[in-house]
Amino acid sequence: MDLSSLRERQKERRRARIYSVAIELFKRGGFQTTTATDIAKASNVSRGTFFNYYPYKEAVLLDYGSEVMDRLRDHAEARLQSGVPALNVLYEVWDLLAEENARERDLFPPLAYEVMNPNPERARTAYQALPLSKVIELILRPLHQSGQMRPDLSLQRISNLIADTYLMVALRWSAYGTERTLQEEMRLALNLLLEGALKRDTTRS
Image 1 (cartoon, one colour):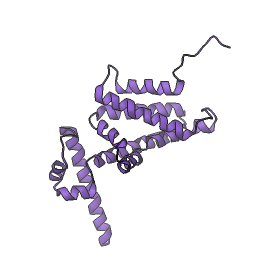
Image 2 (image 1 turned 135 degrees about the vertical axis):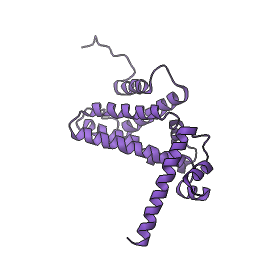
Image 3 (image 1 turned 90 degrees about the horizontal axis):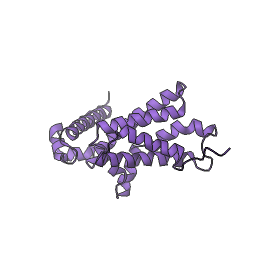
Image 4 (image 1 turned 45 degrees about the vertical axis):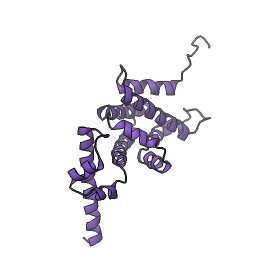
């Protein structure tokens, strides 16, 4: 193994250690109260080294969110390839994401706020790290290709709307809570998006 490869592997291991320690501290003590200094100290690195790997504390959460998105994409691809109907897969992925967010309720608000960061570069970085709309687009593509979706809206626009709805509903639930579980709230929102808000007149032929 050459020297450059060894250095890269050392960097990967150090980043992985910082990440795992940071997530553990966030879960144990809360995201807001955990500082970069706390993470660096617990990871046995300097504060400057932490910032070499993560330019701001929220960037650690982007790695976490990216892992979640990868798992959802893998699940969706496997289920579609096995012949499961696209809408069933969408609801499965929707439920898995709701379960993850409910389990890590304290991590979701700062992660969601990062997507809406007033700094456009940080918001863009967060959006690219959390491609939920791309996962939804992957799931809905068979329906779009078979003509089962509205022809006046692009698949990308529909997928973005569903992803944005998830973000806002889950953020509100994480911050305020309701008598319903997050899974129940998200299913209500998804049903509304897919079926519409207006009452249908069943008496018309």
